[in-house]
Image (cartoon, rainbow, N blue to C red; front, side, top):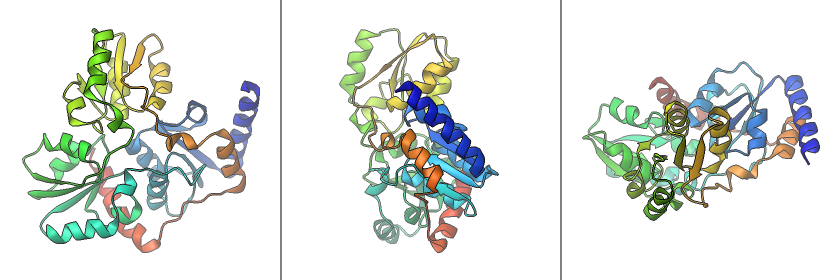
Length: 304
């Protein structure tokens, strides 16, 4: 199997060169895809790369909303995703009609949409954010009332850093929401010296037990730069590839065995190869929606 994978990786790299393509992979993707990526990152880093690349083709190893964001930011480029079924249940928890109805109830509120949303929702949004810059985005807004979609857990976390009224949408990440406070307590009993590092998409009671709360990139940075030799990790297990790559002599204990996003794992080497070979499936976004959604994404990228 290893030989087959190595041959496939080489075919992908050859095709990438022929197509003048760049391969972007999220931290939660399979290790085999992270190994061939030109850039591995969280949603914020990947969005920046998509906006700045000179490549003609973007192969986005992630889920559908990420490919949409890349297409919106680089409309003249061909954006591919290995498997178009790679969706995001949290993104599906909010739609444009529902958001418009909520906006009508709160006409003075500004809308902040987590980047984990569809293009249609982004088009109804004042500014997007990622977990990397969510707090700064909230603080940058000149409004006393903010509609926050769709992740109530991340929304609760950022609400602690502002006096503004946050109107939370009732969405959540299926994977991060799997972690319970008891999971943290149990892991801490087994590894009492290990700092607990979790993603802000986790439940509030889990976040309260953490020693450090950060985006995926922030979790990597903390583990890389902290002297501790073992950590309890509260985010999707795909991050283990980069954790071990950046900190090979440290130990990482995941807070739960349920921290696997099946949607992220739909993509694989065979599908990535086929996408570059056939230039399908392409990500397309309606031009009018893309124009409106681009404004909210560009505002997000301006908040460092």
